[in-house]
Length: 95
Image (cartoon, rainbow, N blue to C red; front, side, top):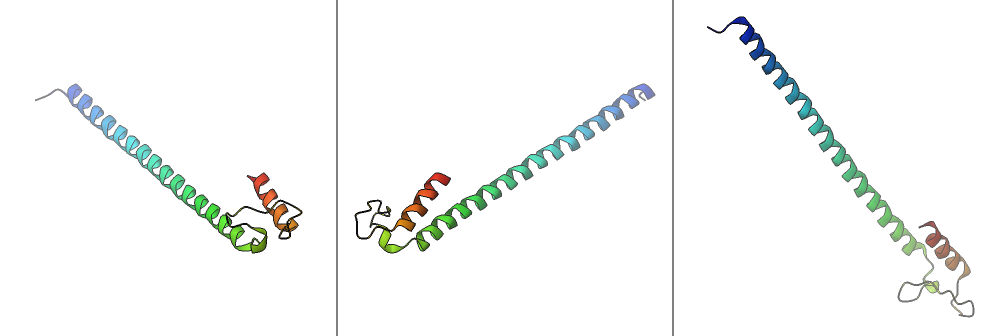
């Protein structure tokens, strides 16, 4: 039979191993949860960016936009829209 000192050492090692395993598992779970939250945040940010772009396209006056989607910036053009030009200019500065 093993001496009591050896048994204390065995159980101490067992308890230390189980404690470390629980700690390590909790850190892995925390990292996984943080990564999942970050992915969800990035997905929502991209959806918001898409929605803003679609809203901008939808609400831009059609006569002030060329076929390529560019805003007419020539004031002598008969289709020039000052409000649309300033809105586009403010949108570029906001980026």
